[in-house]
Length: 81
Image 1 (cartoon, rainbow, N blue to C red):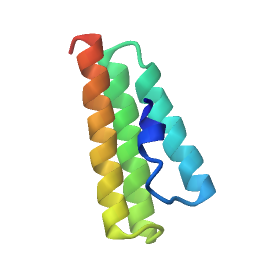
Image 2 (image 1 turned 60 degrees about the vertical axis):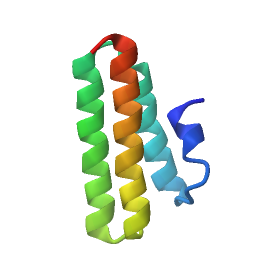
Image 3 (image 1 turned 120 degrees about the vertical axis):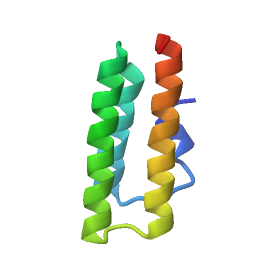
């Protein structure tokens, strides 16, 4: 199951969903740990922007942070660190 599939229960506006899916895909396709961390940093910046804009409620923001962390940690484990 991909990271995007695991977000199926979270309702996001279409443009936000597209950005989130792109960032998740970047993490999942990363070939090295530094690439995973770079994509995670970008994802966290995206989430911070959504939070600052008031685009999503607090529970959705928190769920996105947790989800991205989980996906990144899983990818790092697959890559061996």
